[in-house]
Image (cartoon, rainbow, N blue to C red; front, side, top):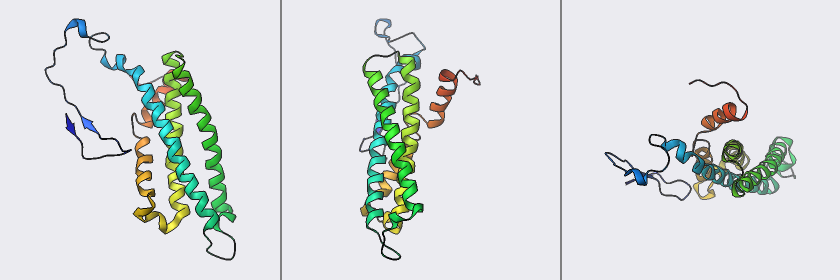
Amino acid sequence: MTQLPMRREGVRQYQLALRDVVVPVGDLVGAQGQGLATMWPFTHVERILTAGLGLGLATFALTRSIARAKQRVIFGELPIGANQAISHPLAHLHARLAAIRLFVYHTATRFDTGVDAFVVAGEANMAKVLASDLAFDACDQAIQTLGADAWDEREGLLEVYLDARLYRSGPVSNELALNFIAKHVLGLPAHT
C-alpha cells in the first residue's frame, strides 16, 4: 500500500495494488468475478457522505459570502449585498441549499432504514450530484463576493474550492452518477 502525496478533505489517500492474490473459496464474498457488483451497495454510504460534506462546504461558503456582502462597502453608503448582482445569487444558493439538504437527509434516512439498495442507489447518486454542484457553485460565488480577498490563502477559500471541485469527481464522477440515474431511474437506453 502506498500513501499518495495529495490530501484533500483531511483524509490520507492510499493506493492498493493486489497481484497474484488467491482467495480460498470459503472466504469469497459474492460470486467469483463479480467483485464490483458485490461492493456496489457499500458505495451508497460514500456517496451520501460526499453529499453531506458538500452541504457543509456550501453552508460554509454561503455564510462567508453573506457576511462579506453585509460588511463590504465599495461605492456609497450601502454594503455590496444591497446590489441584486450580489444578493440574488446568494438568495438562489440559499434556496438550493435548503432543498438539497432536505433531499440528502431524506436519502440518508432511507439508507439507514434499509430501503431497497437499488432505490437508494438512485437517490444517493442524485444527492451526490446535487450537493457537489451546489458546493462548487457556492464556493465560486464566495470567491466572487469576497473579491481579491478570496485569493488570500489565509481566508481558506481556495482550499475549500479545491474540495468542492473534488466532490464533482469522486467518489464517483457526476457523469457516472448521471449515467446511473438515466439508465436505472429514468429507464433510458445506454451504450453497452
